[in-house]
Image (cartoon, rainbow over all chains, first blue to last red; front, top):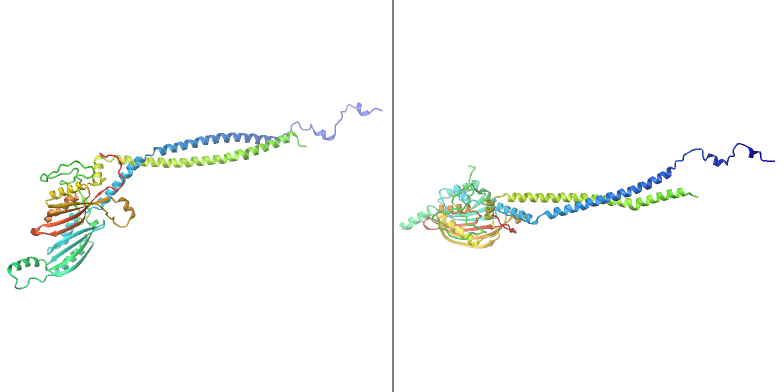
Length: 253
Length: 192
């Protein structure tokens, strides 16, 4: 007997697993797309990284060259000139700031010395840039003058410190001296019955040297013999007679 | 058994991972380093440019000083001291003041101590040279002598004075003076 299914117009179906094969027309391979994306992204990133790194390297080389040029443009000779000039100016300023007017010192001493005393001798010593130390032997006519003179020195604002030592008395003329000796002794003793040594400290700041004008060229008076000499590059003749020194003494008075 | 598609996908992932870890990651680190170096060099360039411009400014300021002022500075603080020239100047000052000139003696370099113990002042001290001057005269003539010494164009610093009485109202004066020269390396530049 023949198989009745072979004459059937109904097509034969395959096994159940094949029945779903054509149920959906398109399939999306997500993983495949992701893999391709990752691969292409990696390739692109590699290329971009290579180009950017090259660009950065060029930029770095440019900065190195710029730094090298800037360092080469620095002139050591110019630096030496500036440093030397600055040092010379500072040294000159240091001495100028500590310069002192001896005339002001003498005027201060004159203003602080009373009329009844006589300075027998005077020694002045500069102690660094701090002060001048004056040691003088003074003769007076009485102890009262001595005390008064000490007070005047102590009160003087230009004087930092005063010490009175070695007070001696000359008790006057003895009776029986001849006239000549008497007059001589009177001339000496009447002015110096009491003598003492005064040690006076005057700060440098009390007697600064402050010139009122700057002399532009040295001027010699006509009666001074002019000595012909070759111009010196180190120190020059600098005797001046035209300017005036503004002695800063008791300006506050 | 995995198909060809699966193998190719795995291969792509493996290659990508290999490129990332063997090239991209180190290249990224290198790029960061280069960027840091660039920034460092830019900072250093700015510093050098600043120093150069500062030096140029100082040089301009120095060259703007007039030749007369530069000459005065060189006179006030010379590179060296000529003992004979200074002795001559003191002789002329003594004559001009009216005192009786007795003697001048140049003793050469001396140590002049600065005020205080400031170590910084050591670098600013010029070199000192000692001289002594002996004169006789009246009190007014002596003061005139001091006045002229003060007005000198270079420092004649009086370190010591000894005044004694003579007959006839005259005074004998012994002066100890110090003059100075620049302490440091002088440049070869000529200043006019």
